[in-house]
Amino acid sequence: MIEINELTKRYGDTTAVRDLSFTVRPGRVTGFLGPNGAGKTTTLRILLGLVEPSAGTATVDGHAFRHHRRGLRHVGALLDAGDVHGGRSARAHLGALARSNRIPARRVDEVLTEVGLVGGAARRRVGGFSLGMRQRLGIATALLGDPPVLLFDEPLNGLDPEGVLWVRRLFRRLAAEGRTVFVSSHLMSEMEHTADELIVIGRGELIAAESLTEFAARGTAPTVTVRSPDSAALAAVLASEGATVASYDEETLQVAGLSAERVGELAFEHRFLIRELTTRAASLETAFMELTADSVEYTAGDQR
Image 1 (tube, rainbow, N blue to C red):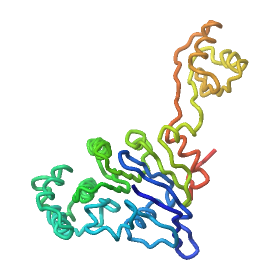
Image 2 (image 1 turned 30 degrees about the horizontal axis):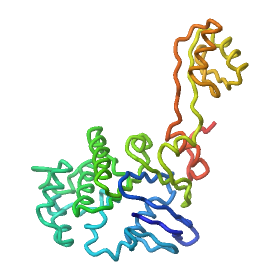
Image 3 (image 1 turned 90 degrees about the vertical axis):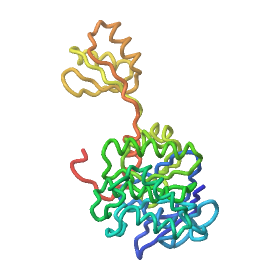
Image 4 (image 1 turned 45 degrees about the horizontal axis):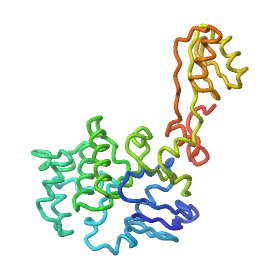
């Protein structure tokens, strides 16, 4: 398990992480979400021993990362895909890491094949890699020691649709093997497809630690979209039944407080022609935007 306990990190007068506590368990993909500046990367860097906390602890399997000998055998991480010597080839980069962690040399080719960097790509200098290729190399680096715990910070940056689908399947497979998979991402749509659990923070503090389904349900309740040429009259009927009705255009209504089934029944009873009747379920993105609204450091555009 990953355990964060009352973790605090201050940089002068700025507190990046404040009394943060949560647990990430094996056998599932856990998403790590928060607005820019929420403290996600700082937390991951503390967990890997790259930053010293001001207070509290961050441990893997009950120990600080620096106490794990041959670290890549215990924790694999991708924090910055660009943090690689540009003059080395992908194979040379992984080979050096394998030797320093006493990982069998055959493992280098195994992970290069896993991420699709084979043939000439494995021999090319990293300085000539695209962002997507660097991301693949970073994932290969995390997998190199076949570790039980894996950390990824924005792993989908620069990947094409095929790459995104591959990463999604990879994370699911790693979790199914009993590993702890902890993924920091801004892509709500991907978290909806990938994560089982969520850790959500804002301004360095915990907002939620629960299943994806539970978190999504905390957003705005499901609504019903109904389209009818008699929308004004239909709106009056729905409002009389206690619904909250908003008009989007001449035909389209957004209805809260009644199920799609009940809206359809009322339309039938009053002989309204219906051209669309759709339930819009609560989404992860909606819940995230609502619950982190007070934690956004920079808000752009017209928020009315």
